[in-house]
Image (cartoon, rainbow, N blue to C red; front, side, top):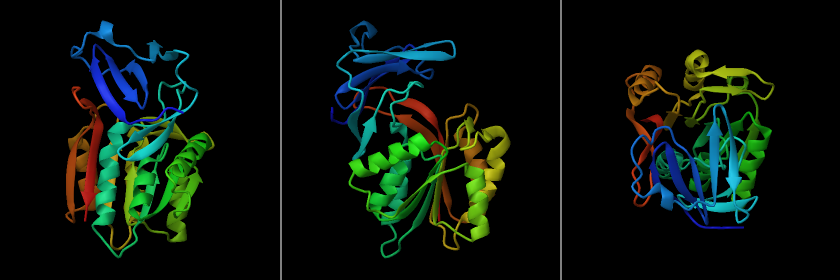
Length: 279
C-alpha cells in the first residue's frame, strides 16, 4: 500500500492536480477558473476523473492500487477511487479538525462529548478522539461508517470511546433529545442533497433550519464549540454566520471564512464555507 502525505500540486482550467501519498490524481474543480501555474501538458497524474455531463469515470494507470493510504494533517486515511470521483478524504476539512482539537486541548481535566454529523470517513472523529474526547460518529451510509472504523484502526484509535452510528441524522437527533443525551461539541457538514439510512430525503434548503434547532437543543449546559461547514453554492460565510448567530445568541464568539484546499506551492482553492462558534 502506497504511503505519504497529501499535497495540492496545481489547479486551473477547471481541474486540480493532487498528490495523495504516492498517487497523483487529476480531478474536476469548477472553482479553478484561473490558469494553471504549471503547463497542464506537463501534468503527469497516475489517474484522472473525467466528467461528461452528470456522469464521470476514472482513467487509472495500472500503478494505482485498489487501496492505498495517505496522511492528512497527521492522520492516516485509507483511500479508494470511488464512482463519485472522491477518494475517501476531503483535506479542506483540516480546519475543522484543528478547531475541535484546539478546543478539546484548551480544557484540560474535562472530557468533552463530541457529536460528529454527516461524518463521512471520520477525519473530525479521529481528530477529536486523538485529542481525548468521547465521540459519537454518525453517517447515513453503512459503507462509510465501516470506512471510518477502518481509518480508526489505521490510526490505532479503535480502543478510544467512539460510538459508530449508521442512521438518518434528523431521526437520530430526535431520539437523542428524547433520551436526554447532550453534547459539549457538535460538528456538522450537511450536504446539498442526501439520503438517510432508509432513503429519507435531506435537502439543505428545506431541512437545515430544523437541524440547527435540534443541535441547539442537544448542546450541554456548558457547551464548548460548534462547527458548521457547507459546500452548497450560496451558503457563504456570511450566511453561515447569521445562522449560527441566531442559533447561539450573544454568547461566545464566531469565526467565519472560506474552507480552502491548500498545497505547498499551489494557489489555494475555495472549497465551501464555515462558521465556528466557541464558548
